[in-house]
Length: 176
Image (cartoon, rainbow, N blue to C red; front, side, top):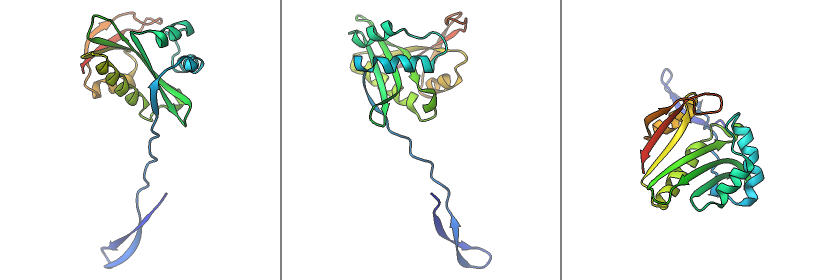
């Protein structure tokens, strides 16, 4: 998509056609909605594609979809292609929600889906009466850490040996 504009040639004082910069393609706008049991197969496939270790099992995902104290949000592109998910946990007597997971299909990275899912999780937590959101992130997950810190999350603790492979988790929190 090259476009040309009229520009003035400073040396000759005449108009010339000069190429304009190409516009980057628009980011696709995902549909975000609560997961249903009909999404279970796609959520299991996403879990396996997005995470090498510490994957949620089918039974745990099914439980999360059905649980009154959990929200599973899905991101869909092209109408019905599940490309991301977020899992939010709440305790009945607490105003602190926990973001248990954000997963984006590896072939859909860089589209801002993680940020959109984080926005939806925060909005859901607020709607459920929570005033803070906490999460854990692998210490070697630079993209996740940058996302959370750009969004105002503050690291408040480190949990050594948190993940299956021994990696530590950095705990973050943000007021909603």
